[in-house]
Amino acid sequence: MKGLLHNRVLKLTGLGILFLLLLYLSYASLVFGVIDTNWNTVIDAFTRFNGSNEHIVITDVRVPRVLNALAVGASLGIAGALLQALTRNPVADTELFGLNAGAAMFVVFAVTFVGISSLSSFTWIAFLGAAVSGLIVYMLGSLGRDGMTPVKLILAGAAITALAGSARHGMLVLNEKALDEVLFWLSGSVGGRKLEYLQAVLPYMIAGWAASFVLARPIQILLMGDDVAKGLGQRTIMVKIAAGAAIVLLCGSSVAVAGPIGFVGLVTPHLARYLAGQRMLWIFIYSGALGSAILLLADIAARFIAMPAEVPIGAMTALIGVPFFFYVVRKGINQK
Image 1: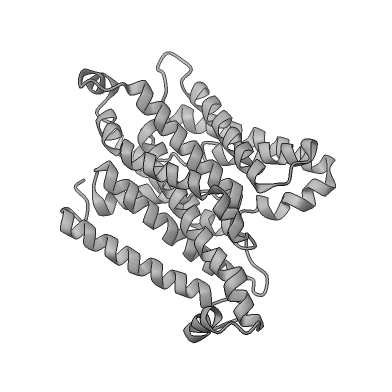
Image 2: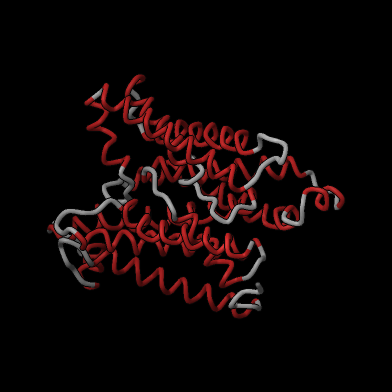
């Protein structure tokens, strides 16, 4: 499939349209909610701040929310594209492969038994949890004579997700104080997160983004098969380790800020391939932009379904991701 935007000019034009869409969604996220505002109020909040509720909501609540959604959405989108390319599995996602669940379980363990509550510690713990879960899933998915297969990876990811979820709930039952501290975080949200949260993990996100762009060409070669890649002089093991490290950086930092949010990384690579074709660099770029757009859209929709309360953003992304998951699985079965 060449992609809907088959040449560089069209791809750049598509990116421009996506950029305009992100600007509009960012604007909508700033002005819409329980307290409706307008563009003039947004401008005044930064140029003539008067301490009103509207100005405080914009500067202290909605601006961090928009920036968190942009960064976390981009990270999850690129992580999903990396994971699908690395495993050659069209339904690979950080949620389905247990990376989110593992990161969340390690954070809950640290809060429950170690008493850790600082975001900087959460970040490293989330990295460790995502890495351990990913390694276990990869090992389980590679067992057997036929080696690693998409079905075994999905089953291994489902098993790790279930195990981590059960362990997490068990720890929270034992410690009600920890339940109060992490329950909102576990629901997955970009709201209620201070800008300092994003600042603490942004360097790791940027490192993950940069690594994915650098790895685009090696992964493109790797997709031809390990034997072909080795024949062209590629050190395939090093490429896989570097890609795995980038996924852990992107997934761990996203979970540390927003909690476990699933299915963004499942949907965006498919949309990116439809729009931009099979070149990995364009897939990563489009996946990042589409991930930000999906998370912003889900966050805006979450405010209106049960207003004045909010639906967890993870539930909103699941409404998109679960039907898409079944569509991809059914499409794969029909092609066999």
